[in-house]
Amino acid sequence: MAPVSSPTALTLGYPVIDAVHDEMTLLLAAALMTPNGDLSGAMRRLRYHCEHHFALEETLMNERHFAGYDEHHHEHRKLLAEMNSMLDAVARGRHGLARAWLSDRLPEWFRLHVANLDGLLVSFLRQN
Image (tube, rainbow, N blue to C red; front, side, top):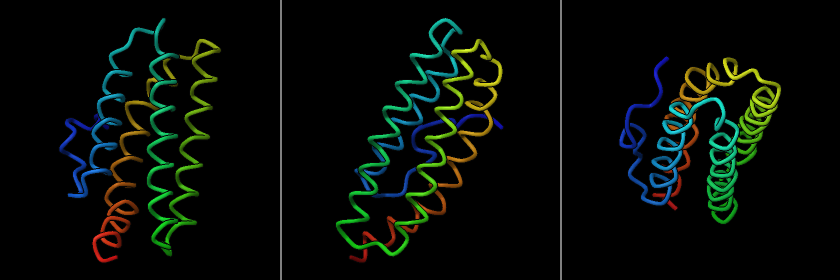
């Protein structure tokens, strides 16, 4: 699976959420182009972004009493756990494993998450 090709590929029409999705897409692309010696730093930047990106979405959900919060939050936590596992893999020299995760698993998760869970959230936010 190819990485998300452009920031506009995941646009939902809700500016604050679109902005964090654009940033995540750019950080993922940068991580994929980073040499092995710098991969840990690129992945840490991506994780830092995800922590703040997810916190922003979860704050919006909490403020508006979004019924889908638990599932959405759970998916965020699972992704962060996977990301931590891949950072551990890089620390052990398993760059190929981390790169496969970055090029296959993460873009697919992101596409599905945006299309489904974030799409529902944006729909809800527009109505409320």
